[in-house]
Length: 171
Image (cartoon, rainbow, N blue to C red; front, side, top):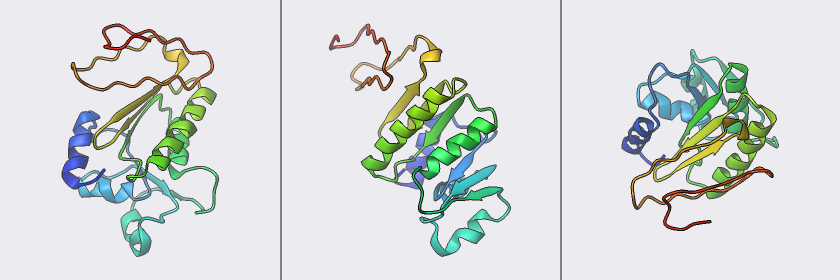
């Protein structure tokens, strides 16, 4: 998320509440603290916090990851949330402005969702977009959007049925 004001707006769009279980992922710890929210857990390799890592993690249970790994810090955070019993995830500002990171996160968490039937929905909120992953176990999904809003639908699972009503372009 590009600025403090943008982060606050995105958190409102995500209906984030201070009572929500928050996991700070790497630099996300700093962003949460900047808006007055203390994460209940933090995970990362801390490559984006630099010298300040110890100060930002003080008093927060956390998991330190190796910078050399085949999974993203976000994937480890999602696994921790699953262990805590989460069935839905709201991910705010995860791309760091990099499309390749966002795309990798989508595919990584889609695979995690397919492996864990209890995980039914993942919402990614960024400055100008919202991406929602839903599991096949969720059944029908209704998307309500204002006229003129761009909606893209991608089937990431092999056996997916998509039907649309009220869209400008039919399938």
